[in-house]
Image 1: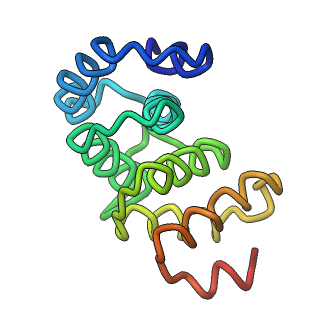
Image 2 (image 1 turned 90 degrees about the horizontal axis):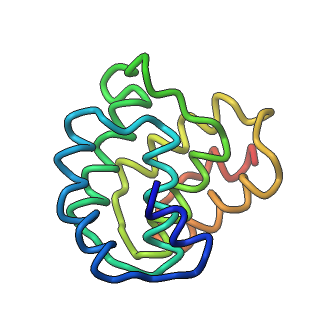
Length: 141
């Protein structure tokens, strides 16, 4: 995505990010973003420190839906890295969406052996920053 490329280059093109933040929520809600798109977009906005509450809320709803809240969406399977990217982004931007974080935790608990140490530490850091309690996950991690 353009947002991801901008973040990788550390180029905070504010008008471009504002446009993405404006049109992104509708496209996310329409199901046009897969798991990688959701994770990359959240990560990019956090990396560049660009707050986009409506976009992050739409990403949060899409993540919850994809992770089985209430049932998993078959087209959106998240890798451990993608889950950690979303968790890190929400924490970095101060987006305290406990339901999203707990959905990520439940998925992480179910696939703990697949998580690289960095992915685990990013999720634990995000929980700490957002003050989301997940004692069973923290013990298992």
